[in-house]
Image (cartoon, rainbow over all chains, first blue to last red; front, side, top):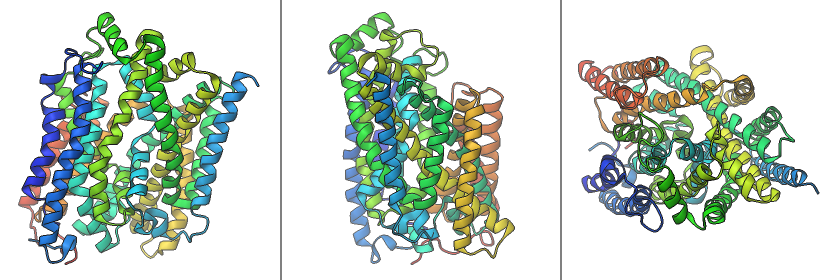
Length: 78
Length: 483
């Protein structure tokens, strides 16, 4: 089996799912307008920018986990 | 020069340059199976980005996204969420898939199923399902290209001629240059698309309303319900949004062409870094939405929402710019068509025809057969596109719901040792059957949820239960990642 992603990396990846998907009833409205955009559109655009930040964090954790394995990314089952 | 001649000349120039790049891309290289399908796994971050962005930004994002903004309103926002989250999903599976692919020399999605589950029959089923769902996707691209070129050339090239010419060019450069052509033509396509989207998205609201702020205020005044869900639809509410976003974000990289494109990367780290930055490219789409939203008030009452972007562009800009949009639009259809045809023909030759009919075929013979198959498939898709009816959209939704049924087999195959051949086989069959039944009998959305999502849940349950019940020893191949 491939090395499973680390728990912090998975949790960081779940954040955008909460922000953009599961919470839709909370942010799917027009008002207040932000920067000329209806609120729902503004909210999604905000998360498009926040998502790379979450993934960058996840990347750091994964990179660290790779280094701790003797064979780097080619590590086998654990 | 007359306005229509100007537009036509610019379209032809753009398509001509794009095709020239495509034909040149592989000219100096020997096209063996490895080079043709995965470009010898030599692409760095930039080319992988271009290839993947080239695949994801298709005619659907150009005409479809603005069309949905126009005709459905709020539900169109699902596109922003699912693409962004699709990249998030890719972060956790593509690097692992790449490692597996390199260790075992995998070139296609089916290869993964064959090696992981040790079954050529399962792999052939995956290949067949993949090809079946790729054909309507290809058909949609061709149809979109026909519409774009016809409108942008002021009807001097009718849509049938546009589809035949474009289709022939695509088949030609795929034939000669393989996946390298797709990545390089993407460079031109992405520059033009980016430029066109920025100009369209900012200039149209400014020209008609004095900016996008006043535009949204105006829409909110005239059609207050249009900008939220369910918008102009009656069954695309929040439950639909959540289930559709989950289904499609898990499905983005289950498309055989997207899955296979990850194998072109130079390293697994390339894919992870790519996944971190790819979401930013999604910021292009709101600009295309703007055109569709503007069209609501500028050109109300269009019968076909897919024409909203082109209609409002035609009303706003000089003909030469319409030519640029037409050329960019044609390439936006040609690039994804190229990778679709490449993937489908490889799947057919390597994972379906060879194991079933000619086990002793050499890799070089597989490339030859795949090249012939790519021309045949293009001809079939052209026939469908020319004679096609409106059921294409239904077929495309069926496609997304269909390919996502590969997800349990991929995810569990990577991370759960007990996932077995029998489990994945039964899960896939149950998933595809459920999707086909619910969609074709008009039950999508089902109980307010996306039908493909319901099928995916059943698929997971069946895959896991059958895997637990079946003898895990005999049904598994050896360790998938080489130590």
